[in-house]
Image 1: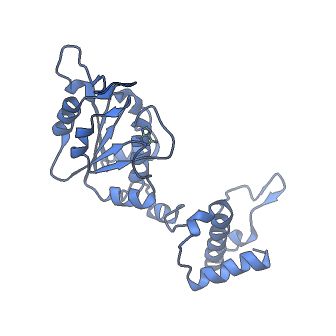
Image 2: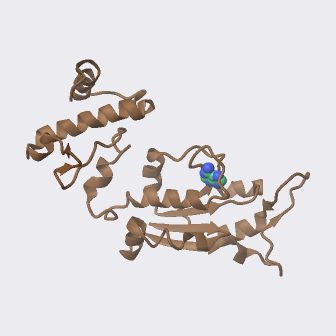
Image 3: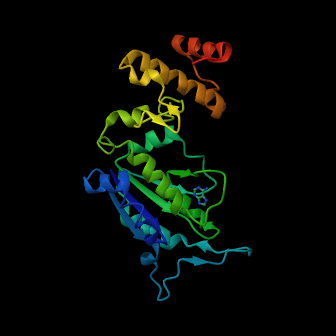
Length: 242
Ligand code: ADE
């Protein structure tokens, strides 16, 4: 997958894209990320990227000609252009799954009061990472790239992990344990030491359901529960035991 990021602050991306899963995906050639400095597409001698808003008011507006020149420089026929902004619908896992299938993403990071509205003609999709206002789209672009990269085949090394993670099945993940067996008088649940794969699977599923019910009940609204899940929910709600 190719990702072009258009930003006024390219240095912000240095560290985050060199570490962990994203860094490794780049090294392995699974992810080709290009960071482009929007300012390089400003042609005047001051390299002006923003200007006062028509009609007056506070703040500056990013100029349409500069932004469109930057976009034109990276656009391909199969590119999907995402504008990160607090006004877009919230980025959630189904959108991450959809974006992960695109061969070429262009992520446009806004700053100041926003961008000249006429640039929106070039935008395929506007996305927000949450209902708060960031200083710019850069952190949001990093979030999007991280979430998408996890879904690129081979990026995690172990293909099961992405499938089993929180939200992949619409539920939160079950609890995890590793050595030692006893830590500060707390034991690892017995079933995990049993080697009985079906019991472990059921235990995990039930804990996933229980956690989701307690921590994020909103995720269960509108969910279709299969027979096994209905029975587990009944046990959780009426037996009070795991
Ligand atoms: N730019 C500023 N705030 C943002 C947000 N919440 N999501 C995406 N882009 C942004």
